[in-house]
Structure formats: structure tokens, C-alpha cells
Image: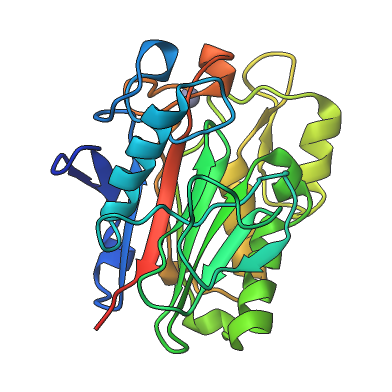
Length: 266
Ligand SMILES: [Zn+2]
């Protein structure tokens, strides 16, 4: 399966066949194409704490939220801290203020646009068509080392009584093994969560290269999510700075792209 590129609307975005089949939700992974940010943030930056102009970011966030919910809403967001804490969002965001501290937003309330932001970290979008709930997760190496994939499945169970076999999950764009050279400590911290899965390679030079997407996939599989219900974007943010922001490739300042999901109203 491959993502569909959607140039409609003020911010170009990707949509994934795995989630597109469900009428009860809308989802999007934004690109940097379109939007009103300039300079290193061009164009669709959704990060408020990266030095970009606040008004531009809030306008971009309105555009992003409109991809999945009623126009005029700000997305619900978190102050992301590279952990695995989940937060239940009852309402949309307001004025860019994070709802809480954490790295997973979930809801069963129709019309609430959830958004996580990243620039190399991998977003996950989760849907449970049986319990009617959705979630968005932000996972970099720290979150993945804390088993973000397993924890996301556990949080869905706790919040909605979701069964792993009922979950449909997109592992979005993020830094690929091609570009993610890390220290042995980082490689070990992640590999430890998914033994014998080959998420670390030593074939590209002296330092290990880490495949965060493969690690998250292995965690989701270990938690009981069927392989056929997981779709990986397989897009490397550092290779594709034409589409995404990459902290690793571009350094700071750069922007943040977003992964959004919402339950439809009516
Ligand atoms: Zn790459």
C-alpha cells in the first residue's frame, strides 16, 4: 500500500489506504508544502516552539486541522516530552495551548482534531473501528526505547477497552535507517525492546544505524496487532526534506510537520 498525496487545501498532505477505508474517521500527515511560514520554516510549519512566527503557525494549524475536522478549529496538541503518557482529548485545542504533557492523544469524541508534531520522530495514527476511538502518537528514539508501540496499544485498551486485534495503525514518515546513525547506547536501548528483530544494522560504516519504524512495528506486532492492520509510510524525513522537516538533516531552526486524526461528526 502506498500513501496518497493530496494537494488540495492550503497544506499538502498524505493519506493512507489503511485508514482511508473507514468512514468514521479522517486523517492526514501534513507536508511542508503550502502554508504561510517562511525561511527555514517554509511553508507549513506546525511547531509553535521552534522560533517561527506565532500567527503563521496558528494559521497553518487551522489549515491542518481543517484536513480532518470542521474548519475553524485548532488541533488538540500536547507538550511532547519523548515519553509514553497518553491523554484523552475531550475538545479541540485553543490558541495553540497544549492540553497537557505527553506523547499520545486519544479521543472517542467526534469532531476533535488530534495532532502530534515531528521532524524525524515517527508519528503513529491509530483507529479502533470496533470501539470507535482514534489516537495519535509521537515516537522518537526515547519513546521507542520506552516501548511507545506497546504502550500505545495498552493505552487504547485502558481508555477504550480496545482489543489489539481491532486496531488499525499507520506508522508515519520519520527518519529512516538510511539516515539514522546513532550511538551504541541509543541502539541498545531500542533494540532491547524488540530482541532479535534486526532493527540495528552495522553495515553502513562504524556507527550503528537504527530503524525506528521497524522497532515500532515489532512492538505493535508483539502487542497483538495483526500485520495486515499496520501500514508503514516508509518515507525518510532526512532523505525527503522536500516534503518534510528533518531535525537531523537541517538542524535547528526547522519546522515540524503534523499527523492528524479525528472522528467524523454525524
Ligand atoms: Zn534517509
